[in-house]
Image 1: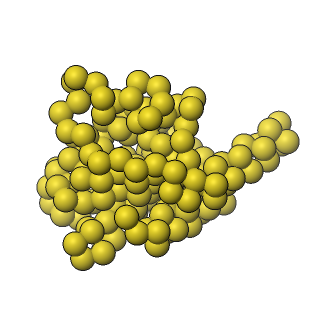
Image 2 (image 1 turned 180 degrees about the vertical axis):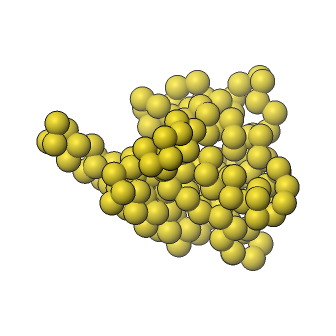
Length: 152
């Protein structure tokens, strides 16, 4: 685990917030070379696609860049605990390690909710470590939604 990659995910989340997207950022890394393979932030509002979560977008970019549908031996850093859809994508992509910032008691599916990786139908279980730069990730989300509520 390398904090500089979570810091980059946080920068992407800040970019998402500036674009009025839910502030979540994701970075896919080759831990052997410490090279970023792909990165993304939430895009659902701008592309009008409910599946355009940061994790899904980063996985799509990494698969396209590498010309394959499996991301063996790669790590994913994301600022928020993945939802069920994103956890399934992580599993199908065969991500080796999943590092996330803030836990998501309402929508998370890794340590909360359905706990997708513990499901008997889950074909691949990455190593998971949560709580990385958790305070910064949570604060960014809380500030974003507080400002949204004030506008409404």
